[in-house]
Amino acid sequence: MSVEKLINEELICKITDLQDLKVESQEYRVGVDSVTKLAKALVEMKEAEAEISAKEEETRLHEKEQKADLFDKIARNAIQFVAVGGGIVVTVWGTIKSLKFEETGVCTSTASKKFFGTALNFFKK
View 1 (cartoon, rainbow, N blue to C red):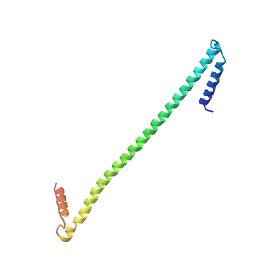
View 2 (cartoon, rainbow, N blue to C red):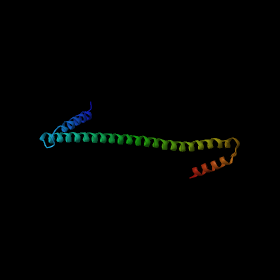
View 3 (cartoon, one colour):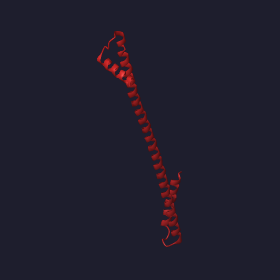
View 4 (cartoon, rainbow, N blue to C red):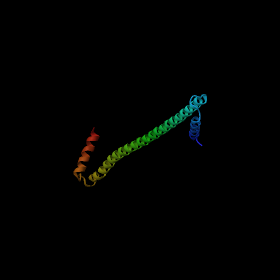
């Protein structure tokens, strides 16, 4: 049995015992005092349990926030990686397509002309 159940049973026994006593008697006062102490102990136990469960809930929420933050960081890094990698892929693709210049001797498309112009200006600086 749990302590809470034992205290509840003892509290009920004490209250039923008090019904048989005279209100003015010393035994009644002692009984009321013991019932008060038991009730106080029961309330303190419930408060302690509520505090523990509140702390557990706070810990659980904190862990949830940490997981969400980690997911957010991973997502941001993945997006940044795709953006940088995409730029590199486009540059390499443009270079490969523009290298047809060496085969034919002329830039074959407007895009390759712009690419070479940008690349040459970049290297001149």
